[in-house]
Image (cartoon, rainbow, N blue to C red; front, side):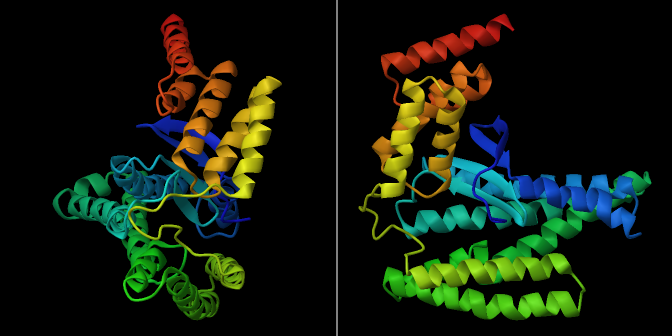
Length: 327
């Protein structure tokens, strides 16, 4: 629930769609309203910190997305209650490609922290110019440094550290066994983290994070499904029955001209795991055409350009471009 991999579309930038779940809005509301109500800071401080959190998360996830785009993995970003996900429509072709995608997020976060640190060192007047800049730069430094290191170093699935640990285990164990070791290591790590966060730092958020990670990991361990579907660089993703069911529903919505439902189902398909290339191509077509019919021409273009460039798609792209020129 709190680790939702789909949400309400916010914007599309650089060909990457960004959405946010309801729980992310609740988290930001907590930062802006509840913390000030508890006397921890002012409402203005809350707004600045919420902005710093959002910027930092987007920088981190766009780091993943930039490399994922390089390998044509069709990335999108979802902000949720405990951070963000960079979701890919396709699995990386190799563990090496996967490693580069995973490591790019913390790398961008640490680079941003270093940049802010340089401002503190060489332009302290900018930081101290006002209470707003002081709070903003302090939050950006702390969030990007601490979160990037925690995310990178803790072997907690589905954080980047857990993904790196899984890639490491795959070098020595079969896929299923590597997944089991990864989940067990994650459970072993997250329990003391949750206890320490709640008792030592009195952080309910850390405790909740630990509880939901624990539940998610235990469920995944019980199901026994591989964490990575790729067996080798030559393997192909297989369509799940769930994907096939969603696609049939999306096709039906398209035939009934229920554009809102068709787009929703298409986005849902992208959020629940990788799928064969031909199926993903059809999903891009459904989302692009349905979004165009809804009148969201700029957003529709970003999806239509990913679809196979058949005559129907080319006409749709032309229609969107003409509509945008008239605005």
